[in-house]
Image (cartoon, rainbow, N blue to C red; front, top):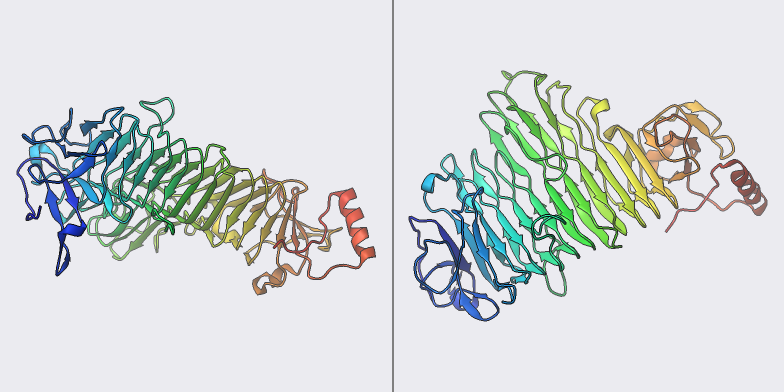
Length: 526
């Protein structure tokens, strides 16, 4: 079973294993398992099979019915509808081209489609299960192939890797299921994958599209799961020629449409790069967006960080100071139709360093149709460097509570908070414009002229007056803009109760609040 690493002049779909019987004194030995090896991968729950391309020669295996491995013509592997599916185990199904520009193809990783015949695909958590990654750096490398899993029931895999390290090339895309009404439709069971990497080192990342009828969990398996990333960003870019010519869609580079709960660590479509010569940007750069929809199935969405930002650092004084002929933007974020949503940090900012550009926008963030609570435990940054009018818009709509750890009015164009229960900012509220008429009592609130913070008529946003950074608010109550942006026409920004009022005072406040639609003093919700 032991064999040395081999390379072929033809297109190859290899199976890479890291298994217990391949251990040596130096640790695990990685080998490529190809036609002729005794044990390859368990397909159809028992038969020893191997995935191979049409030209792979004689040997037991599942041969691609069509395709050349190009992105536009991927290998197609069909599994029997009654065969039991595919169990990768601890092996890696890795599709790649061995020679540069093999058969006119400039991709390092070959593309393939697994048509599972309505059956399951499984693999061992902690291992990379599927890969088309290109790990050759520099100018002579190739891009990565796409990975598609269609007509599938349950997906339970280790990592999926389609990232690219070569210059002028792209990361591969990962597709699981298809939209309802398209092809074979969405995955009919739950989906669990350790992590998904479609990132790129320079030009354009791949996309990640998941369509399922159940939960989508990006985390390790077992009794103590650890959440993993979906990475479709352009990372560690240091250009001598300028920025990417283009990237992916601003709205759905990462798209998960399903019916259930969603768990992931970080969702990344961010691009960070330094440019030192040439045109500072190329033609146009729109960063990838995130679109999650839980299908109103009552499941929770739990994510650590979402980052769709664009950061550009110009290091040469010889470059143009502006980019007036170009359009740029960071990715939008849309999360809809879950029972609850919990996120730590959200960053859709557009940062252009010292450039005085007026084009480009920060990404919008919309979390709507949430049956119960929305909680954002960290920071929210929708800024657009030096151009306030092109910052992103924050829209939150919850059937329960909205809880924000902090909010900075200078990092977004507007914040629309609409909760059936109430909204609260447990930490600092930065840069809220306090000017307006009124003494600031619940019965005589300051009617503000600002339009950045918004909530519906009769709704309340509570802040903590004991937080040092909130001292400028003076413990007062403010009437903010309505959801349409009409100044002083919406609900109220009002402090938590610092002490319980005397019964007689509380009665008067309740009477006045109920009769006039004004806020009443309340304790912080625990």
